[in-house]
Length: 266
Picture 1 (cartoon, rainbow, N blue to C red):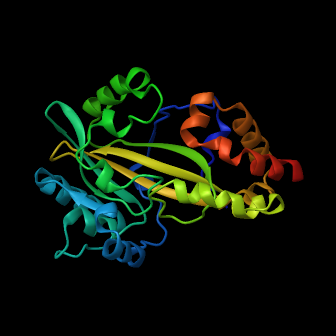
Picture 2: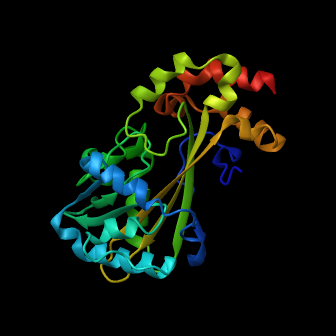
Picture 3: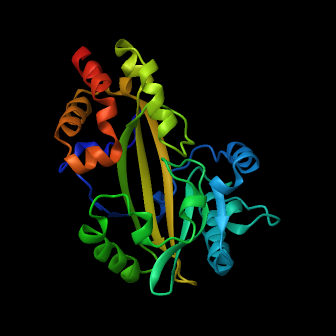
């Protein structure tokens, strides 16, 4: 089942698209994936985990929130944010304001879409979103003001989407995924290509004033659209109507032939 379908709502371009959700809807449940996350920490430590010293208080506050939401206790021998990440399926990114800018100060990131903690730790909102076309001009002032104005209590949610040639949760780099496209036959595009949706939330922490950013990556093969004509039609419209900047940033051109082959078969 496709849980989130952000491509259904135009415009087909970059958008902040935040909405307030009830606190009880903050974490969407499902398997905590502690085993998978621990294995990644053992094999890819710098890619999936990182912290800077000033983040300890914020990490502990996140752990308390996640423990309350899941009804489970984290391992006290682990770093607090990592312990919190083992209790839920979401990735957890702690943002704190230092030197006048919101920066990533700790992260448990085991389902990335083409980035790693090593690449992101310590970076500001501007630096983190540098690859997004015109982010500094179009969105940065609004996002920074939103981070400043966010009050404890409300939980904000947004989602974004792309298509990948892998259904794996852990995708730290795009090149190997796109290279695999040459091995996908046209008549297998529906089962070999995946809709990848990141469901993200933001909430201000009441004690430290830090902001917790969560990421949950949902994956479905394109074939999941076959039984939902409304979402299939919306996907076709979004794929063909996406802005040039959006298509370039997401690398959609690499998938055009296969996606159009899938759509033609429907």
